[in-house]
Picture: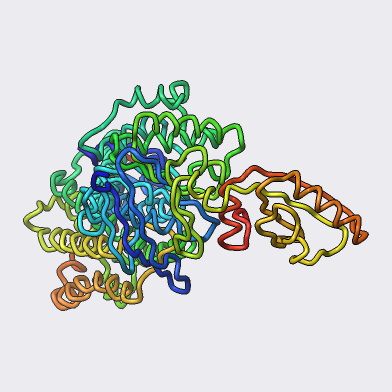
Length: 306
Length: 287
């Protein structure tokens, strides 16, 4: 592997009363899409904002494109592009003006027209920022992030708060960037997004990286098991559930029982037999193919979306 | 290069308000004869220019609160770039209004002699930049829009009432006149008034001019040190001390000016010219 384009070692970030990032380390190579997956408040945004040079770290070492964001902030910012969370543009700024304005800050820049075409904003070029829909705003944000043809692109929750259709639109855009071999670091709390877009994923919880690898590797780590989620009329002891055929792991989560099993059919058969024998009833049953959600549940005992 | 483009965004916000503001004042003050209009020219221009701090502080705080500054921060833009461009944008937006005031005075109110226009222009520059910088300091020491507006009010009222910008200084009691020498606004108003009413050139008003320039530089420096991009970062404790440091030049200058009395004498002389215009019949018959 060539030298990583981005390197984070033991990053620490504290706010007044929160220890948001507690020793995060990872590397990102050129042309890779790297995802930080974790629930809200896990420290993803703090991490990415240190990399962008927006926040001062309290410990650890960070290098992006060979630059230290604290020592060479302006050099670094020439090289990166970013779509931030919790940001906005002046209401009365027009789309093409926004692109021209931000374009004026960079030495290397892409053509406004090309970006407008690519992000489907040609018709809106004279519209005020305040007149754009949520999806259009997000597309403009992405267009702005690509203005300087960045070496590393940071996307902080690029689809948070968008409706599913718009979210898919944004995925298409990111996948296109991926085909162009752009180096992208993105944060998300959507499983689907991490699995679909990322070459490698670091799962983050309580300010720490708790697992890292390709989505496939991570899923294999949890034994490539399927997940059977059941709700029962009466409580059932955990060790009985664990003893069911083909079950690897069983745990209770928000009033449901989550069974990880090698094969679903034997598990369900033995489950039904057990219920009959104990006079219990099945309220609901759901089978899910293995996903990063299972990895997260296994590692933390919690669901990602909580 | 960067700055000129950036103006665009400030344009929409700041062009409408100052214009309305001007027409209001010009309308009220300009009802008299040309001599009186000429007397009020200085204060009207000063008010116009001083308004800078209000607009600038509000815009900047709004941009911070809405996370707009964050977006600039992730681009290669420094705090000084951001502040300088907003001061510059504000300056460019003030010029048309100032020009309109002068044209108004000349052609609608028939003021034949507008005084030393170069000196007036230099004071407009110094005033816009210095009060703009004051706005930057206000933005840097307040956390929310409400705080900003309260602080703006607190600054605005004494600045306009005790500096001769609304009531001529000559109307005010002696003691209040004493206070006025400590206010930067008085230096601006007097400078502008001496330039327009008494045709003084810059050389004769150098102290006022340099005081404003020095104050701009100091305020700008303090504002760039205290600049915050993120809505949730609060002001550090020592920030208010920094901000307080910006008033030092005018305390010192005020003490000197208090002893020397030059400025107040000029203001009173100007006021006498105004009063004479009331006792003498108006030259062109209007009143």
